Image (cartoon, rainbow, N blue to C red; front, side):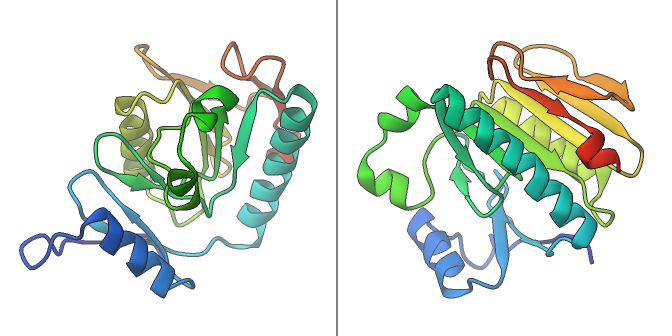
Length: 192
């Protein structure tokens, strides 16, 4: 099953509160919303993708607990991006001082902030073109660093603010560069 995009804009344009309530009223359905206001229904992942997502998240969590530089988020967190989209990256990270600048209410709902870092791990049913468009949308919303990991082709696309996309074939590890200081993701947990 692939993601399904639904355009209700000619019938109704959901406000941010209505979109939040739609998501809360349907907890078994993962919704996103692109910058055009179209709803995107995301299918659940399969076992191998879920396993890899978990292992990646563990590595981020351990690094973040040790450095105490920011806040990590899993794929169930939806962010209200500055240019209007509501997106849920597989892994996201925000510097602590940026997170602390949000109000308690903003933190509780869909945080109105672009993460500093996002990671998307492609599922076998994901469209490469649509996932690349999503990654570009993150960059257009001031995300500093993004990784698109494609397990099937063993390719990684690295997105950096203001720079061309870098494509790596079968890398063994990825560096968090100056955005995630000292973080290195060992890709053996993904390629296995």
